[in-house]
Every structure is written in structure tokens, then in C-alpha cells.
Amino acid sequence: MNLMNDIADRLKSVFMKTFSLTAEQLPDRLEQEFIEQWDSLGHLQLIMAIEQEFGLRFNSEKIPKLTSLAKIIEEIPYASQL
Image (cartoon, rainbow, N blue to C red; front, side, top):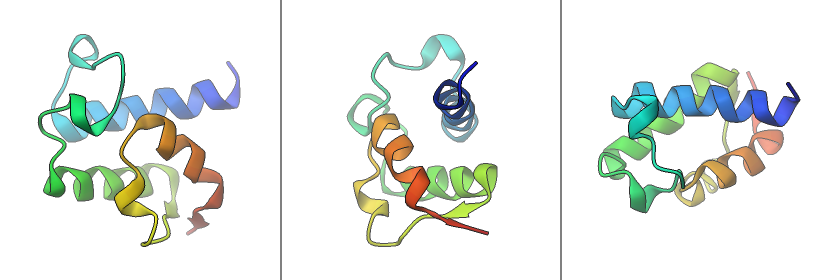
């Protein structure tokens, strides 16, 4: 398994835990508009869970823009390591 697939799988696991979803309930497009629980509070919970899972901290200016799996994956290399 390559690194990007590993990151995506770990993120999907965080999405499922944060939003209490099963793998079958995950939408094909992991974007904020397709997950009912992904409101403003859900967004903060998701970001904190991702930061904990990966041991990193996102730039606070970028957090509001992290509204899809793809955008989160794209931003991980630029996050500060804890």
C-alpha cells in the first residue's frame, strides 16, 4: 500500500469515528456538503481528531478551507508536526 492510500484510509477511519458512520455510510465524495453531521462543530471535531491521529497541527487560516478529504490530504504535508 502506498503512502497516499494509507493516509486516505486513516482519514476515512477518523471520518467514521468523528461522524459515527459505518464504511457503508461514507459517501463516495467525502466532502462537507455530503455529510449531514459535518456542520461547524463537526468540522472542529474532525480537525482535532485528524490532528491527534497524525500528530500534527494545521495552520489556523487553512482550517476553514479543509472541507473535503482531498483538501485535507493536500494540506497534511504543510501542517506543523507536534
